[in-house]
Amino acid sequence: MKKNDVMKQISAIIADDEENLRIAITILLEQLWPQLNILDHAENGIEALSLIEKTKPDIAFLDIQMPGMTGVEVAKKATGLCKVVFITAYDQYAVQAFESEAVDYILKPVTKERLLTTILRLKKQLTVKNSTTDVDEKIQKVIQVLENRQLPDYLRLVKVKTGNNLRFVPVSQVLYFKAEDKYTIVQTITHEFLIKTPIKELENALDPKLFWRVHRSSIVNIDKIQVIKRSFTNQMIVGFDGIDHTIIISRSYEHLFKQM
Image (cartoon, helix red, strand yellow):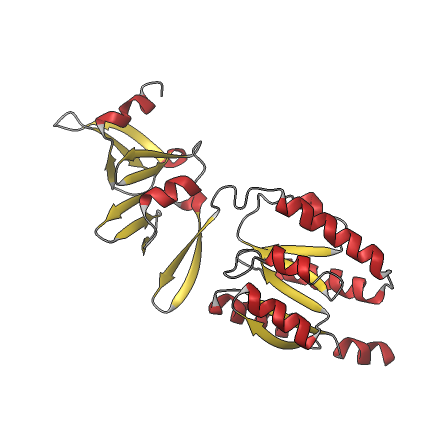
């Protein structure tokens, strides 16, 4: 009985710059951990730190990349005030840094199974009386590893809108990106999405070993190329698995495919 009463008093805040994600995590937490008291939400790092200092939650779920302050910066300033769970769209972060269980991390999109693992870990931490100094040292080690990383390494998920909903498309599923008017087409086998991120910005964020710029307006996923051929006008073009669309390769980029 006493244990249940204590568990009912555990509180948390959720910080993410995407409202849909804040809502989704809240719903999942309510389903998986109904005793958890979610005190409030923050949409940027500055709000998150203010909430932590004001409400003194037991747990802070922090998106790593937020405007104002990153989740890592918030965690650094909030060391010793609460448990930290980082939420990230990138799996290139130093995963070994989290093995201390002083903090945890969840990859987007957040799944029930992964969140349940985190909840079980948090419950275990909250019942163990670690010294504040010990916990602080562990968190500082994690923060140090994250700060020494180039953030981000390569883009793993592309954020797209479908109607009023937000969706994350794994870049591994993207056949190509193509600039068209004020938008960029994100093409998968089953869907065509439009985003506002320029091709040049995408080129800098994508893994160059897998995504090649083949035209001033196009980037292709070389893992998804099915055929490379010449058109009737002698232009080199690439075709993809599962769709009829093709992408023209500019002559200045043809050398990339000479060895293939």
